[in-house]
Structure formats: C-alpha cells, structure tokens
Length: 55
Length: 323
Image 1: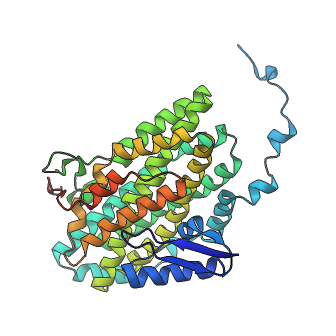
Image 2 (image 1 turned 30 degrees about the horizontal axis):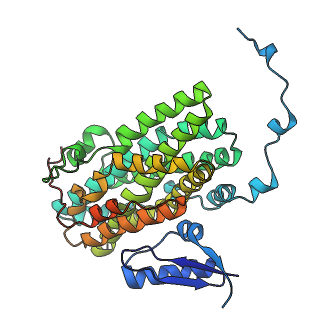
C-alpha cells in the first residue's frame, strides 16, 4: 500500500502519492514550497493521508 | 450523605487503564511523539536577536512586537485555560487523551516561557506596563460593511466555554461533557490554533526571512508550530471520535466557528504592519486550514464561510491605535 494526500489550497487539489509517510511528508512540503510559498505540518499530512493500492 | 466508606470497590479494569488498542491509537502516538520532540528555550542564544532588533526602524520594531506580544499573552491564556479539557478527558474515561493533554499543557507553558524570555532579553519588556504600547485592542477593529465583527475567542470564548465544560464535569452529565468538549476543542484547537493563528506563524517566519533578522524568534516559531500541529490534530481526532458516535455534534463545530466567523473573513490589524508581506497568501491559507480541519473532523465544509474569507469586498479597518 502507498500513502496519498490531496492539497486543500484554494483551486489546487494537487495529489501526492508516496511509498511511506516520511516520503509523503517530504513530497508534500516540496509541493508547498514550489506552488504556495508555504509549508504543511507533518502531523496534518499524516492525519490526512489515506492508503491507496500501489500503482 | 455518603462517606468514603460507602464507595464501591474499584474494579481492576478501572485501575489498570492501558490497553494495546489504546497504545496503538493516534492520540497515544501523539503523546509519545511529544516526549521525543521536547526543547528548552533556556538553552537558546538571544544576543543576535537583540542586536538585530536594535537595528530595525521604529516602525519595524512596533510591527513585529505587535504580533509577538499577542502570542506572549495568548500562550499564557491557553496554558491557564486548558484544565477543562483534561477534566473532561478524565470524565469520559479517555486515558490516552489525559496522557496526551499532560504534554499539551507543558508545551503551552513552554511556549509562554519562550515568549517571556524573548521579550525580556530582546526588548527589555515582559510586564503589562512595559508591553502596553504594543497592544492593539482587537474588539475595536471595524468592518465598514457592518456584516462582521471581530471578537476575542481566546480571552472571552475559552474561559466562558471552559467554565461550561467544568460545570458539566462537576454535574457528571456525560452528554453535556461530550458536547462541551466538542465546543471547547472546536474553539481552541480547530478555530484558534488550527485556522486563525496558522497564518500568523507564517507571517512571523516570513518577516524574519525578509529582514534576514531575529533568528531565535524564527527558530522558536518553527518549534512552536510543530507542537501546534499535534495540538490541532489531537482536537480534530478527539472530536471526530465523538462525531462518529453522534453525527449531530458536527453542528456544534459549525455553530462554534460562526461565533467568531468575523475573525477569519477580514484581515486583522497586525497583519498589515509589515508592508513587504503578500497578505493575499495568508488569506488564502485560512481557507486551506479550514478545509484541512473539516477533512480531519470528517465533516462538510461551510462553503459560505469560504466565500466570505475569499470575498475581496470584505476588508476591515484598524479601529484603534496601540496603547
């Protein structure tokens, strides 16, 4: 199973998928830095992450 | 009148509270994480911040302290007003909540300590008369359309709803305790910590970056906001558990947010004091954080609130000067 998270920034909806939570947190924050000049907290990413079947 | 001798014998289950399910649960894991992530503001060096602060213009000094002084006061207030949550967790028999909240209270106290040390060492001000020149009276911020008002959810809402929760606990009314917990956690963890304050952390961190100054203030905010992530998601996880059992509690969340809706829809006065900041970014963030909290709570968003936050015609006016 992989971990998936969707961005809630206004008019974004970008979806990040990663092998585990550590990778997900890193990838989400790459997205936030590049797309929104911001960051997302680790706890919030972990709590919003859902399990998805591996591609 | 009963005496202590009349009390029934305690069961073993009421004395041994640990279960494997509890230890594998999300709130117990937040407790463990809080223990691993501790920090001590007494170990930090404030001399560069003092040197940087002395080089700022009077407008910059006033601008940054107008923000930090709100944090200094707010952290003290929440440290002092957390007790009803712990009492409610005890009454609901949620030992993992009690354990986590013990770290929560220490963290709020440590945040207060950090801000007290920073103000004392950097601007030589920590007591009320010394900080009065920097304090803005938020209740006097005005919405020219007359549709919204700003209030004080921390200084009015938390003591008021905390007292209601204490009264429910004293009465042993389990339904009122659950409802009171959802109301208090919504105001505190969801709305104040989870939506209204989140952009303010970023405003301070961005300001330190733009000015290339105040490294210990910046570091402190980064440490604090990581703690806040646990606080916020404790509140949303705990409320979600109660809402799943009683879906009607979702309305308590919406009603509580609406009490202080005005605090999110307009720009607050202090957000304007650093002209280099992109204020639209922080307004958009309120929507993201609100949608995140609803996602964690497992409830629908109120689209009218999002529309109000994004409505460019709603703007507030600074109604009063500091001091």
